[in-house]
Amino acid sequence: MLKTMLLSISNKCAYTCPLCPFQNTGEAKISQEHIRNLLEKIETIEDMILICTEWYSKAYIDSLLSLFYDKARKISLFLPISETKNLLKQRKILQSGFVSNIIFIMYPETTVPEDDIHTLLSSMDIDIGIWFIAELNNSSYRTFQKVFPVVRGLGLKIWIGEIPYSYSNSMDPVVFALKVGGKSIGLPFGSRYGYKISRAYIDDYPVTLVIRPPMLSNILYLSPTGELAKHPKSQFKVKIEEADTEILRKIIFMPENLPSSEFIFTPEVYVILREEHKGVEIDPETIQLLEAIQTFNSLKVACKSIGIPYSSCVERIALLEKKLGKKLVTTIRGGKMKGRSYLSELGLQILETYKKIIFKVNEDLAK
Image 1 (cartoon, rainbow, N blue to C red):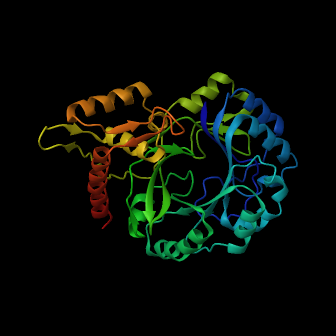
Image 2 (cartoon, rainbow, N blue to C red):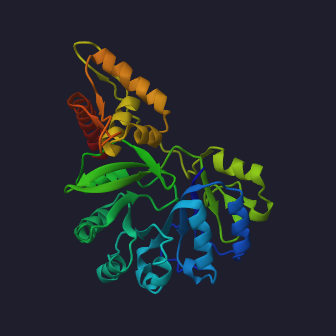
Image 3 (cartoon, helix red, strand yellow):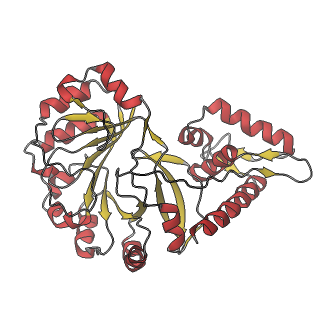
């Protein structure tokens, strides 16, 4: 299965998004037939993402969305927040049921168009979120603190991360969250849109931190000029009509280091918990598994989210329980809650101890 596919079908651009990696001045050559042939070579797609403005200018957008719907589990729109009015004109398309969610990209010094978003929320059953750009400067912090109550009042999901797919070295969602009052910053518990994701709370409201992985795999980008690559800045590109199944698999699954304009060295903290009396050590990978169980209340889903086989997770938990002499995870075997998994009191104690240490470390690094 392809995890994430990025698609930009129009080269029209208002150039309102600084440092956007999708700005393209080449001639748009992509056709519906090109896309249809490409999708026939892909079994299923976890996240299909339509990028940028003017995606709705194509006459065949209805049939295109129908094609995506047959292949993708979720279809998302990534748009600058300035596009809300244009999006309102396309409510008929959005009401078709093909689109799962909309994420508006919000830069510093911009505002939330409350009335437009109220209208979108009331006229269609689609999840709407705000992706706030995590620039590490006082202007960004002030803008976030100004718009946060508005976004919270609208009940929107909040994402904090870099400019999507820019792979910038100057943006750090964890440090940003700490600067704007984030608490209970968790470990990465899964992935979405080609990024690792973690959770934090700001004034008891959940926000998702979007953390770029050390390298990319299982992601595919199709540009409006008809080129396939792993991401917009990738050096390895192939024309869509030249991409056979073997080339496609190479692009999707071969790991690729992220682009970097300079060398930046950052501290990497590796914390092991050691129980004082029995000397039992608990490594970060096990802590990550416990956090995923706490998040999803399912051992199977937790294992899948962190990319560890279910049998290995069960063995890891059982071995640690044996060493400690107490249960860490309880799974309900029958009734309506069958299959649900929960951390025991000891499991919660381990997780909270670890999170307090990591929070303190991150807090010190952010100073």
